[in-house]
Length: 491
Image (cartoon, rainbow, N blue to C red):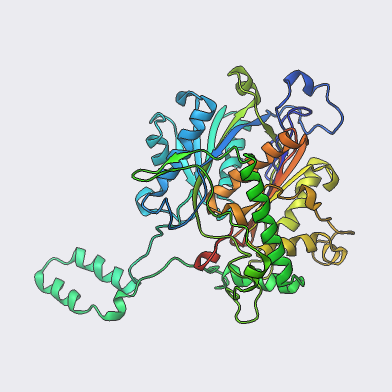
C-alpha cells in the first residue's frame, strides 16, 4: 500500500521526498503568503526542493467493452498527455522526463510511456519509462517523479497511468507455445510435420489473465469477502457505502466538480466527456444481486465492487522554482509518501490502516490535521473493514503495536466526490485521479492538508500527504483492485 500527503501552497512549501510519505500543498495563494501563513504547521524541509503538482487530467473512465473497445492502451495514454499539454500550455521541450504506470501490459507496447509520448508529440530526446505496481502504479510514477526532482536530476516531469481492460492479452497454452517455438526452429519438412502431428485438442485451450494472487492463488474478491467477514461488515453496510459513492459521484459530475476530466474524440465514434460507470441504483436493486465470489453466503457483489475500467491519467510535477519561473500557479505541494507491504493472504487489503499512521507521523501531523481524505475504493467491504480496523483499539494494540487506535477519518471529509466504486478503476490510472482530486477538493473546500491511500495486489500500499490548500496523504495496498476482473474491478 502507498500513502501520500499533500499540502496547500498557501501556508507551507513542499517537503522532501521520502520513501515513506508524500505531501502536497495547494498553491492557490501567492508564494509571498506562504511565509506569513502560520495557522497550520509547515511541512517544508530545509535544504530540500519544494515539489509541486501543477495540474492533472484524465480521460473519462469508461466501463470496459464500451466506447474505447477498439483502441489500444497507448491511444488513451496519448490522449491524456495531449490533454495535459493543452490544459497547461506546457512547451513539449520543457519536459525532462516521462514516467507512466500500467498493470496489464499490451505486448506490442511494453514501454507504453515511450510510445504514448512519441504519439503525443514529445521530443524523441525526452526519456520515458513504464512502471508497474498493481493498482498503485501511477502512484509509483508520481513518487518517481518527485524523486527525480528532489535529486536535482529534473525540473519538470510528467507522470501518469493507463489501463485498458477491453482487450487483455490471452495466450496459447504452454504446450502450444512450446510446439510453435519448436516449429519455428525445425529445419526439415519431416520435423515440422512431426510437431504438427503432436498437437492435441488440449493444446488449443487458451490461458486467460490471472485473477488471483500468484502467491496465494486467491482472488481479490475472495480476500475482500473474508476481510469483510472478519470485521463484521454486513452486506447492508457494503451496499450502503457503494450507493453513497455513486450518489456523491453523480452530484460531483452534475456540479462540474470533476474538472480533471478532458473530452476525448474516439476515432470513428463520438466525443466522450463523462465517466459512464456512475449509476446510482436503489438499495432494493442492489439487494437482488447474488454474491460474486463466495457463494452462496458471501457479501461481495458486483454492486459493491469496483468495475473493469478503461482510462488514462497524467499529471505535471515540477520544482516550485521552475513552475513559478514559467508563470504557473501550482495546485499543491507534494510532501510525503509511504509504501508498506502486508501479508497477502490475510491482510491483502488492509494497507491503508498500516500506512496512514506512518505517513502522518513522518509529517508530524495527526488525523485531525487532515482536511481531505481520498481512499481507493476497491470494494466497499475493503473500505469498511479498514475504517473499522483504524477505529479499533484492539486491532491497533494487537496487530500494529500501538497503544491506541489509529482513528477513522470523518465521513464528511472522506471521498466526498465519489470514488473507484462509482468513477471506475483503471488500475494504473487511479493514483493520479486520487491526487488531483485531493488538490481540487482542498482548493474548493479551503483545506490545507490532504491524504491519499490505496491498496494494491500483493498486499502493498502507498500513502501520501499533499499540502496544497490542503494536504493530501495516500496509501496503497496491492490487494483489492485487480481481481474483480470477472465482474467488477477494483484496485
